[in-house]
Amino acid sequence: MTETHVNTVANSSASAPASLASDRPLGTPLGEHPTRVLFLGSGELGKEVTIELMRLGAWVCAADSYAGAPAQQVAHEYRVLDMANADALQSLFDEVKPDIIVPEVEAIATDVLAGAAAAGAQVVPSAEIAAICMDRERLRVLAHEELGLPTTPYRFAGSLEELRAGAAEVGYPCVVKPVMSSSGHGQSVVRSAEAIDAAWVEAQEGRRAADEGDVSRVIVEALAPLERELTVLTVSSSAGIVTCAPIGQRQESGDYRESWQPATEPAGEAERAQEIARAAVEGLVARARKAGETGWGVFGVELFVLTDGSILFNEVSPRPHDTGMVTMASQRLSEFALHARAILGLPITAEHVALSLPNGAVAASHAIVVAGDGEAEFTNVAEALAEPSTDLRIFAKPEVHGHRRMAVALAIGADEADARAKAGRVAEALEIDVR
Ligand SMILES: Nc1ncnc2c1ncn2[C@@H]1O[C@H](COP(=O)(O)OP(=O)(O)OP(=O)(O)O)[C@@H](O)[C@H]1O
Ligand SMILES: [Mg+2]
Image (cartoon, rainbow, N blue to C red):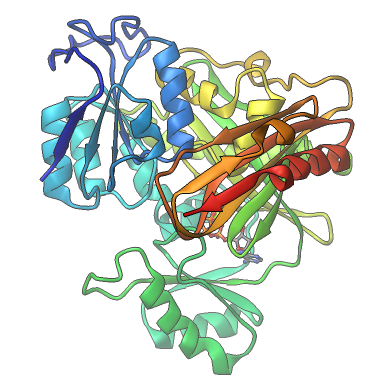
């Protein structure tokens, strides 16, 4: 069952005219023929993209598994359903009749997405890309074996025996991950052969569809000696593919805590990182085109910089990236504005993705992760934002249970250290009561 909620007085006609994907009608979201955009997943990233789409006059409906999700609070309408349920998802498409479908989470019934694309909806960036990127095996085979991008050595396994053999080949220490999982779920670092059986169990329990009967395939890869990690936001639009300045980041227990842009690194590294990112996205977009889809949107390409300075491709999320929240401070068009424009068919060129920072300055973001049980109330905001060149986004998620990212602090500083310190002070000054 899909719950229906209308945030606005008028409801629009479901029958939008067939229009050129690159020339969508804008400005009449409550009229007869709006461009209808449906979000599958309504988190803080989707909220920002929703705002950007609404600024350009599109109609937006935000769906999630619970009510009150961030994007649902700003969209024209919202729906609540289990997006992994194929029937529920199909009913949602039949009812909303979206021109553009934006999957914001990976746990979505992908065959229904493919069906919608075949029936003429624009899936962002494409149903084919969504299916490839949610499957580490398909993505790694494309990136390394077809596109020739450098990755850490890896093997795939469909049984414990295959995993033992694969681990012996890539060597220890290695990392075992379910081919379908995100945010570090089901992953473990294995330091010796004795611990490999436990990693298999962990992967089976942590994979996305742990309630399904089938065994999950896993990837086992060599633990790379990381110096640091980079995200290169890459935009595919009607004007081609362009890359943003690399974003540096600090990860903690599987989640990003701080990011900064541009990442200050040795000469030549940014260019190499951008080349790998562009090649990965070109490969994905080529697949989309072959399937008759646009492949338009922002991609977050995750890269490893090793202690010897070499750069490896890790993975790519076919949507704005959480580390890219820093672009709300560093670029005139944030990753969210770029995503909105790209999916509407508008051209994005190198000028559009340029940094808008004073000479030598760096921007930083600091994720505010709140612990507790209940509603999170923010006070002392005035003091937190007293310093110039700082900013804050409070996601307005209804509740915290355990740990949850609830806000992000942003800052511009003279250099990386200054920007990170400033954003950290904003986060520190906030008083957050969970009750
Ligand atoms: N082979 C590896 N060598 C070293 N570190 C690794 C390796 N694989 C993963 N990691 C670390 O674990 C993090 C998460 O891994 P990965 O990005 O593959 O999984 P994920 O579940 O998709 O995570 P997320 O959804 O947070 O991006 C990486 O950003 C990196 O810090
Ligand atoms: Mg990752």
